[in-house]
Length: 494
Image 1 (cartoon, rainbow, N blue to C red):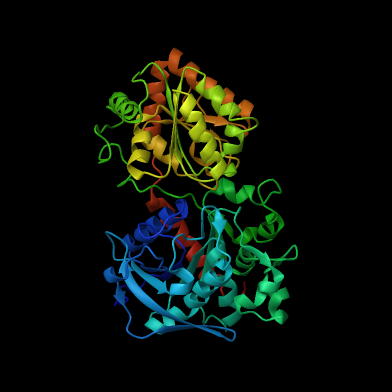
Image 2: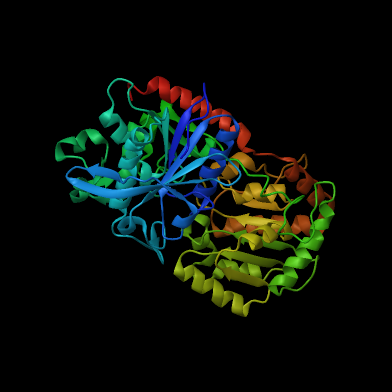
């Protein structure tokens, strides 16, 4: 059983639905784990609370001997608490165990369909976060929740708060597009009474909105890049919550995610046959040849290779890549003198279209699924990396691409605009698209192809410039500590 071991530092409880290596559906899992590990290295007592899903084995965890009861209005849930550790750290992970709620495959749903009882599942997790400290004899200074599934935590904390007795609360929005909307009739599942509805912040356009409640009740709100923090306060990117966010602009901070360079580093990457540095970046050609061989593409350094590793969803630009018509834009790209590799899962229709297109286009390879090793080899073997996102809170693959000397082609939005500098004669690290639309994507690819064929020295210079960029978690932690200090100072008056 974990004991608090640090003095004069924050005690931080992170409440999350994902954390690598235990459960992952996207970048949230990577960000939570990396931030927790970096806070631990900085001397803070940081612990995680998350569900114990079916794939997380009990026999590798310590079980607390007595049951952990979660009371929500008249409903009582008999749960158990298991304890583990994040790899290579002292970060404790508490797993909330309840077979009916969490003992299943999938985090939010399966095959693109959300579980019908997600509101109940994540409400139980949120209520558990408020009582876990007293159960363990370890009271956090800050409860840091992530995205809509745990956005109820700040509201519940404020509801219980007497003076400064409860922890300060921080909510991080990793993607505003997912808000946790439910019919108003499901309010009793949150444990709130009808009399509390108007003051809770939950009501939004005649629905319950978990994320809105978190935004309005948290002591501080963060999101994962400075540009995204500004964008979500506008109607274009605010997903109907722009005015709510603008009303709390004094509590809203954009902090750029970092990269775990112990995992994403071409000098040490064990997934690669050949390692290289900014000074030996010409060795990328051997990574490219190996990738072409692995995927059955023509082995050639004359043709530029464009990589895509992504969730196959509209946000990531796949509506533009695959519609209108039968993959019109992707066909147009594949008919150029280039090679295209796509790795990912998502919308079943996009998966089907990609499979069919790859069957008939010899210079397009589509791998439906996720393969971490292959993702690393695509970053190392591709010449360019395409991210035509409609919006992108932070983005990680463009950061990986910079480190691997793979030139990103990205939309000028969110964290992509914060981290990629458009190429000019004076320098730059990538190609910026003004919009996620077919014409802009074609224009960006043509810029890349022209540079590839006519300016090899510029390609080499841009690669080296990107490889020297650093977006480490150490700098992000300093900003989070400032947020935590403000949250503690604000916690009496949200």
